[in-house]
Structures are given as C-alpha cells and as structure tokens.
Amino acid sequence: MRKTEQAVERCKTMSTLQKILGGKWKLEILYYIAFHDIRRFGALRRQLGEITESSLTKQLRELEADGFLIRHDFHEVPPRVEYTLTELGKSFMDVIDYMKNWGYNNLPSGGEE
Image (cartoon, rainbow, N blue to C red; front, top):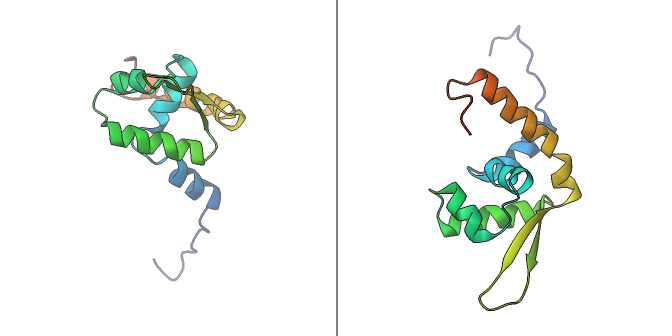
C-alpha cells in the first residue's frame, strides 16, 4: 500500500457473515430447507449429491450453533431428524432469494436450478 492510500477499516459485519456462512454447502442447505421444504438429513444429502455425511453433519451443526437452524430429533427407530429455520434463518431468506435471482440474471450458468 502506498503512503498516500488510506486503509479502509475492516468491516466486522462482513467478516462475521463470512465466518458463519463461509462453509462450502451452507447457503445451499439453507436454500433447500427454506424454498424446497427439504428438512431431513437423508433428503438433504441426496439433494446435494457430492457432500459427504460428515461434511453435511458439520455444516448442519454449525448452522444450528450460529442460530440459523433448529434440529428436531424425533427419538424414533430408525432415527428421524429434521431441520427447520429459526427466526434468524427466516430473516436471511430474502438475502438468499436475492442472491439466487442475481445469479440467475448475471452468471453464465444463470437460469439453471
């Protein structure tokens, strides 16, 4: 950086968002839960395709810890677990919807679901 340039103060909000939502699959997980009503672990894994079970578990746990998801364990055999959005997660859906529409209109692969 040149002496004449002033450093821009780091935006703590963007840094925090990056830490919370920076996981490879997190935005997609939130998208499918919110807009396609895919709530069960197995259905999410099938929808995402390439994700490993351990990666999905990790991403879901982080989203839960960060307040975006609630995990519902039905204590059944075979095990049944579902995920729903918290109020915080629901409040973020306008952002995800905007990002999807922006991508649809501006990215080379836009228009693909």
